[in-house]
Amino acid sequence: MIPGVVQHSPFLHPNQLVSITQYHSYPKLGPPLAVGRMAVSNDVLNRSDRGDDVKGKAVHVLHTWKDHLWDMGNGRKMDVPAPREVVEREQAEGATENDAKQQPVGGIQEQIEDGTGAEDILGGTQPEASGSGTQTQPATDAARPVMTTLTPEDVSHCLRSALLQALQTTLKSLPPPSFPIPASTFWSTYILPSRPAYALGTNGLSDSNQIDIKHSTHKTVKTFLKAMAKEGLLKLKESKGDVLVTAVYPAHPAVGSHRPHRTVQSVGAQREKAEERERKEKEAEEKKKGEIQVIELWKPHGSTVAWFVAAGKDTSSLYTMPDIREIFNTYVSSKKLINVQEQQYINVGEDPALASAVSAKNEDIPEFMKREETLKRIRDHMQPWHETRVVGSDAVRKKGHVRPIFVTVKIRQGRKAATLISGFEPYLLQAEELAEELRKLCASATSVTPLPGKSSDLEVMVQGKQIKAVTDLLISKGVPKKWIEVADLSDAKKK
Image (tube, rainbow, N blue to C red; front, side):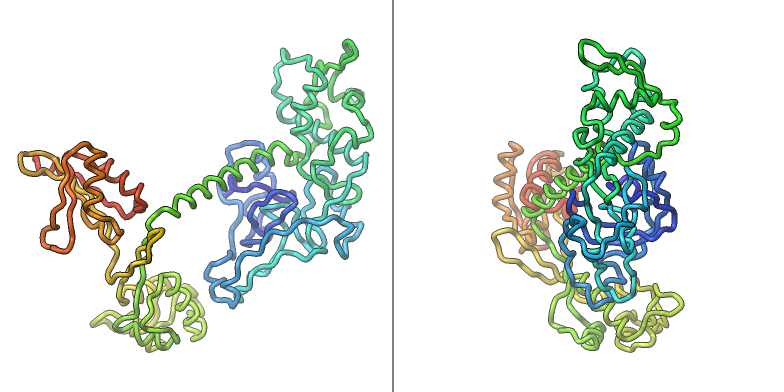
């Protein structure tokens, strides 16, 4: 989606083939994780960079890491390569001087050598999306983005572009009472944040770290501002040896013809958002480490046994859904059971073992079936198991579907509400411990009794409507929220 694009190449156009990579701060460049075609032009992405509320798809994705196409290949178990560092031009083999002449100064070079983009998110790379499933490799050293040193003239050009960018955006809406502005304040508040994030100079691509007034032909801020005033972009006044900016002219023709670029400020803001998102994801991962892990498993059973034998798999093993999917994808590819006209369909009638595995009782063998429906039927005809893992304890495997913990409020004798907790045994929780903790937490009486009709299972009761307290306690003990089912039946009883 457009709001998720952190960096992109300029001059992108709809239907252009691009790659999508994971964001890494400079100088690292991640490998492509997906390929697709642009849904919008570069102008739409630039509007989003400037803070406009732009929504919708940025890329129509054709092929991604770990999709169905990937799973059918022999490289499906490969990990994502580590990000590579961009290299200096003198270290890159095969680089030519013509690389630096494809774009004006202040932009991001869209393609270097054989089409590798210089950005971190949407690039000009064109990896093949073949059916082999081989992981798309990043470009060679000669084709990857290279960083060079800008000449003083290049730096001056970039600083002028920064002023034009500021005149188009922040300075344009500045009210007259804001003037005069000291030169140092004007420089740090409006010019520096508007510098191009990347610049293409005489010698090649560079980053914003080199766009410094000391590296320009002007050497000082005062000299630069005087040159801009001479061009008619702003008005200056000298006062006690200092320079004040008394007016700016956003209507200048040079401002109107300036092509917006990605600024240091916008890239920095999006980088902060990406880092914040990454921080939250890490916190969520750390939180999951303390959770009770519940894994659903299936064992070949009945009509599915013959199919697992035909696939060359152990019929006594337990399989997760991803395992079953991988076995299925490999099987239908090797047996050439994918429908030629409609590839979402599988010709199950052509393979007796598969047909038997998906057919229901008293049902004619179907000629073909949708891929997901075929997988669902195989799973439904297998024997369900589940595995519970708790940090510091051995995994426990049991036959049958995993069931949630039920937290129910009912009216008991004396028309008093009570909260009942049952089904917690598969999560390795002890009834007496739960009852004691709830007694202290809720300051209410608790009890433990056999569950009606099931002498081996127990039920914990706590006086009062304690759904929230019980739920919070279960979550704190690592029970995933999705495995807690609550119901308040007290009102229904009263009626």
